[in-house]
Image (cartoon, rainbow, N blue to C red; front, side):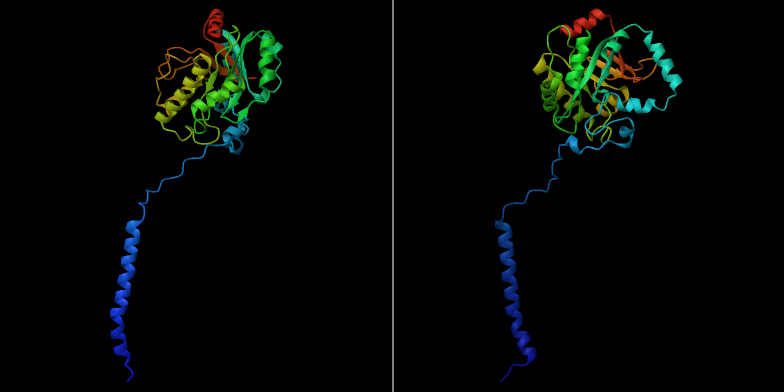
Length: 302
């Protein structure tokens, strides 16, 4: 006799329940036997490739090109708002100060009339050699030789990208591409240009502590490779904002301060004096060594 639909449903309940229980038990067993799942971690940040970096609008207005940032790009951008008369007055005041005068150049100057600047009383020159670990100034060899040919003291600088490769790796790249020091009495120690980020956030997304650690990594590696303490180029505002005004370097690394004004102003990081001062960018970056020429000679000799 055929079973009624109600009876068939009642008879099927235990079977369905058993099947469900079996399925659940198998799922639990499978989960318990599987390897523990590690907490999800965010992927490490990619090291920025200079070929992929895009200057900010402000940096672009200051003449920064991809991979070709230069000393004081933001200071120059800020000073553009000043009237030509104020800039000329500041430069005139500064030119009357004591100290040995010099210039610094990068690839955007291309060919430099070194004889002209030597005749204008410039005794030393710094040339940008590298940036990060994938950019080297194509004009560096000619610029570096040109400064030496007219009898200037010369040195090289590196534009640091702290959210890229480690400080140590960037120091090695710098030394391998023009930043090495030679004990010839004419070569000045290399410079770490550490300043406003032209490609993103002001402090490169690093905390004060991380930034100080990065600078230490660079300066320690540079000294290990060359025997010299690197000069640190920065601004008072950036150093305070991005390193917490760290005093970790004022006893070892000479300071190169950037400030386009009639006075050097407050110094950062516990430094009691500056070694170099970039005081104007008109018509190109001009600098002052703080002491007598004999001390510049001593700095070159090491």
